[in-house]
Image (cartoon, rainbow, N blue to C red; front, side, top):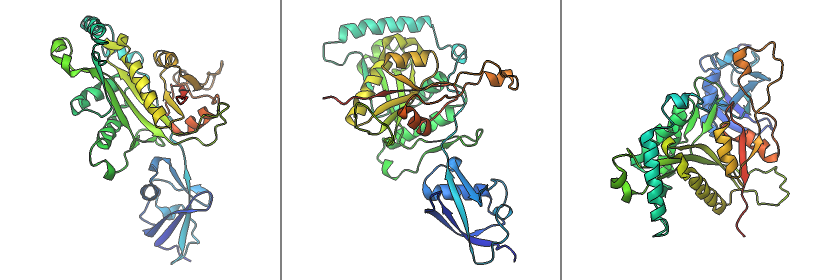
Length: 364
């Protein structure tokens, strides 16, 4: 019996629950990729994390469905597919490495003079009205949009700008009056299949030179932005055995934290992290986590009280079958605890960054 040209498709989970139904699909025209995107739209899950199986065989993205399913399908019957949801693969490297030096990110004489002037002004202003020279913005300011994008993208590896830009867009949209009707902001890397991130809940906080000092430092400070952090909330873990019995709330994930290289000694990034942690505690969060770049990133987060929960894997001593370039690409190792195992499944991962976290202890 000939295969039907069109059919209804029922998509079920591995547990057998129906998660999507697609009506009157032309099996000779629709490809596996088309069906993945249709199911993704129906269930609200990134298409890059969806695999569709027919009798245990994955549908090919570029081939018609009719080429992958059983020929026993007859006119008028329904086609049943199984949907497998997979976590995102690591998104390449996060550390800019030597590239940051080529961008002129360190050691500007003018920047050092500006930092000295700001430090002196900060000391004289502290205690007068509690504000000091710097201020925190928990709602993204339109005037900082381009500066924030430039600061963050220039602080991390090349190739991340499209994702960072989408995350910043999501933060600005969520702060607008139209945030209740916005569409999901799902990033999918076109160069790396299987890499995706839901950026819909991203928030952007910044610290900047207070507006009232803008004129004073205008000659040596092109903009007021000092540091910025992009973050989002992850769901609450359910499988953590916490010896201290801290309530299991959501986990706040820091996606990117960047500071004006000329002003890193002002400790404004630490102040921003403190404010973020206080807010996380007030929201009932269990922990704060971040994929920390090696050396300077891990050092910074360690000083803030964070511990490695998923380390980088140590490469084998002998790798005769691996090229020299591949041998220098690190991978994530085994989680150190239950929190690490949860974050390994839920966080935005990079190939060169260990996962660090800090369990928050609510104020008594």
